[in-house]
Image (cartoon, rainbow, N blue to C red; front, side, top):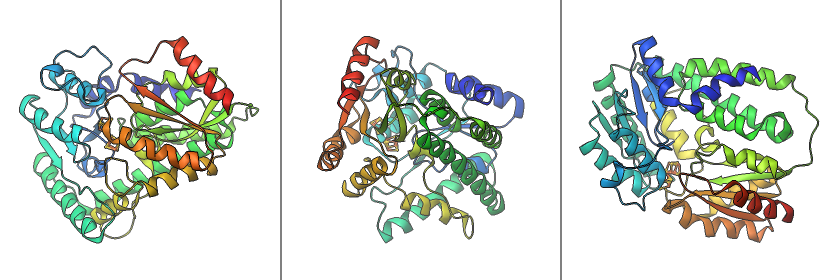
Length: 370
Ligand code: SF4
Ligand code: SF4
């Protein structure tokens, strides 16, 4: 599909896209980790928020600052900073989430040398009244810090940005829903490229590209195939090949609960009233990731509901090696699925995927069992 080309180009090399964007617009680019960063505030200044995914290159410089038992996202992000691949960034933002991102923030501040560095210290629990008040204060402080570095953000501009982001989220969800209705309508690799690009691309251009993609998908009517229906759960997946391997093995992803998937776009911000309060409320309302505390029950029930709502036959957990939050969470999530007789398998991810044959065998035996 022609509309997909731009997403493939950006997802293959997000840094090249951001450098070009800066040269063309003369505006600033801000790197951030994790979906707990309220991107709208960065976009509201006119700057480009760019999610740092970490390198696929061999890690050398980062290992002198981090233990090798940190996840590849954190090690890869630092490697990109220390080797100058992120030199085009005007600043970086670290939300207070897992231990690895918190510690990376300190190492980054001392060694990476970007013009500004902001920590957004969100509360660890998000589901109490006091946490909501605190979160609102944190976002107001983040706004002031951004304004000092990047210039003023008016409430009108912020409200307009929230509307744009909500429209983007609606379109991303529409793509997911179309895929759930008929998984043959778009490949998993395509959806991966779309979501990854959404965290990088100029958000106005993104909206236009998503609109075209949704319109093009509406014209497609492929015959439904007999592939097994799978939900992916876990953290960050930086391996688009996984989708192709799954499809070859006879399964299609119908939904996910990934940081490189629905965790990025789920939940709308209120479009009326105070815009900063609306951003805080969105984070307080959405299903938390395991780096936040609210017990496993809500997440477990949510995962079971996703499986039921999308008529999935099994769940594959994708967890980055050394990712403590997801590794500790996994047995509890599996138990929720086991109780409902929903089959699942765990795939631990490193910088490189296992050999194709090995992966194919694991997927095939799981899919055969469904
Ligand atoms: S699992 Fe949570 S803390 Fe980790 S990257 Fe995803 S949203 Fe952020
Ligand atoms: S949540 Fe896991 S994958 Fe994400 S940064 Fe933290 S340790 Fe790494």
